[in-house]
Image (cartoon, rainbow, N blue to C red; front, side, top):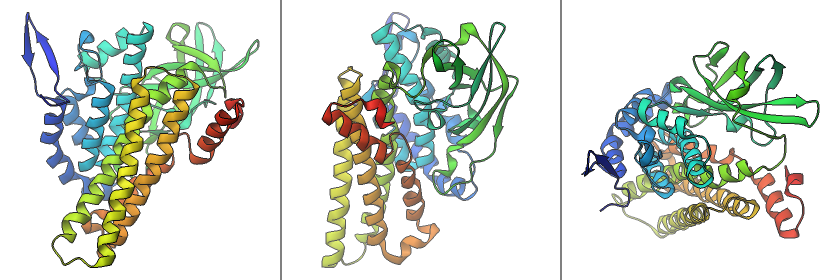
Length: 387
């Protein structure tokens, strides 16, 4: 049986359903066929998300006990890597939903967190979760003002991948608590709620099909009961160690898939012509860099498999994030060089992969901050000072 095989219960019998790998392989040709046009028109990969939804992959990471496919963390990473080989934008945008589901599934299973209702909704209603992590991270963003029964939220959230198709925005805002100081409140906001507006801002160099538009929250009411968590602003919190452990191997699996696609494209074309010594060395260098990225991703996934979130696991994952990004960027850079002048033509497809890979630079922790975190860990210093 494939590693990604999934079982589901039907009545009293076990009914075999297509594996996630089989579903992705079926979708891949259509996703690949749309990729260039989506990129050139700055258009969200709406058709691809509709197919992901139709095939049940929105619930891939929901535990089987709650109605989902019950895929493991490693299987979800593999799903995103495979998707990215055909369309990087689809994989990256989908990773943002997938890591929200996987994080909540981990908390449900390991901490008995009260997230069962959300996970069941993902499975039964096929809802898409949006993340605002790219504009928040430890400091949070936006303001929360205390009103009767809750808070009024004003914020502008950037990098909300999948925004055109999203149902729930998983986000936060900062409340200036008179007793404890700046406090980040975590909550979910329906995209159809009053005061929520998507701003069509996503005109960018790469990953153009992710629909990572800004989302404006204008005096949006969030009830006290809807606040899912609170934490001090700017400080590492147990929740963020869980997020780091679960989310970043998923996100960076997409970049591995992009690099693999670039490598395969130039290798396949090179096999049609006579190779000289210089080009042979270039292809060896490509495989060296891609292998280094793959090994780093494997270690990130292994770190998550320890189920031990904390300072050390976050350090291990974030070192991996830096090494994956480095290997991916070197792979696509060398692929451009190996392909020669033809790589400069958009019709060749390689420059799109090169541009998509550049987004690997910008997720937390960016290299300087990651090095500061790792250095402070090595020296036994307070890692909050690295932020």
